[in-house]
Length: 174
Picture 1 (cartoon, rainbow, N blue to C red):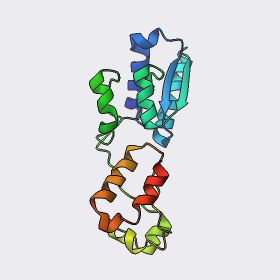
Picture 2 (cartoon, rainbow, N blue to C red):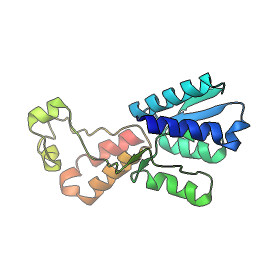
Picture 3 (cartoon, rainbow, N blue to C red):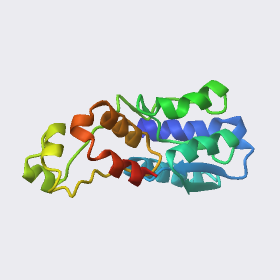
Picture 4 (spheres, rainbow, N blue to C red):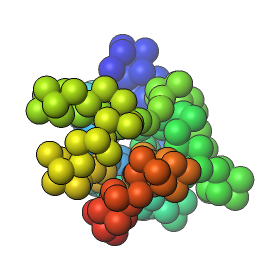
């Protein structure tokens, strides 16, 4: 989080005419550490300025639906370009506006923990090699996250490496 990001969010909240008439300014927090911190800092400052704030913990898809329906006023977690597919229908319908990206150049890929690194996992091909040690599992992040969709697309595009994992990730993402 940068001072510029927080000040931008505060300026948006304080200056937006639609929000000035609200009894409560409602934020979506998707549970990512950076967004939780940014949202908490912003709401703390707004509370000190006399605004009533509320934070709803929602998934990314529910966040955009809630923004479009007016149940949420602000989401401080727009990671571009990875979230383009999530926001595009709402932006095109005029129900969600992007003031600016929160994080530019974001991308998703697989990562491993220390145990995986100790096995020698350094590439996608190594995942299939160590399938048994991984109990045949790849874990996605929260359900509905675009990162899971991107990983599932990688699985579909390279079945030779990921075919044994496709069922598991799809199951975990619902």
